[in-house]
Image 1: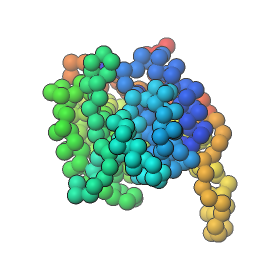
Image 2: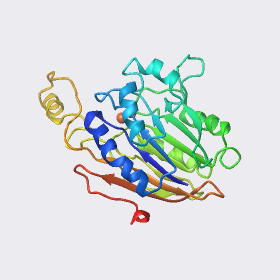
Image 3: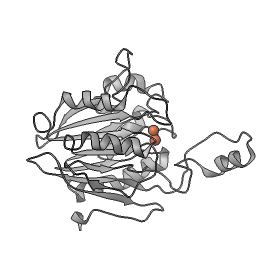
Length: 275
Ligand SMILES: [Fe+2]
Ligand SMILES: [Fe+2]
């Protein structure tokens, strides 16, 4: 299978980059399944039904959220109606959290893709233990037995926490990919037991910014220690940022992983397979 994962869409300019570039990328790479993180799609904070629709219409099969899932309160009810929208899986099970943290999808070609979002615990408000969470999630739809591909998003701040979780599930997932830091890392690789990995996919946003937000008020606040205008998304051209993974249909494991960066300020890169 040919899979695409794109990091946090930040604000209007991030949505514009997704709308402009994702349809062509999806077609050129003949992607079977596309995941986009949308936790910052609506004004940088959370997601609304209308902003989610823009991302689905551009070619996403699944949208994941994260620590910003509920910044827009309408997401609490929208997620009940929209099976393709996922929030973190590892909320404490005793809480009545709306929506799902994992979902088994079926592609038009009949392939089954299981997507899980795990929320990290280091340097962010922790949920339940990420390792226990991913172990429990993977039992729902084991690779090969139930799912043709398993994709785990580790939504976390700390690189070591992401890499540890990836090695923990190596051989049981097709792809473990991080997001949340909004900065793409240069470490994409297929791990020893066949799971593709990149610590962070990067954001779909304007990189002339502080992780997608207008830079001037943030710099001013840091320099003066005084309040500045509220954070809002930077509005220059955004970079579509993500990873492309090709999996082996027999094993469900990854054959290759390559970065994708298109538009905006970052150096562009497209998978070699598309040339
Ligand atoms: Fe984010
Ligand atoms: Fe996040």
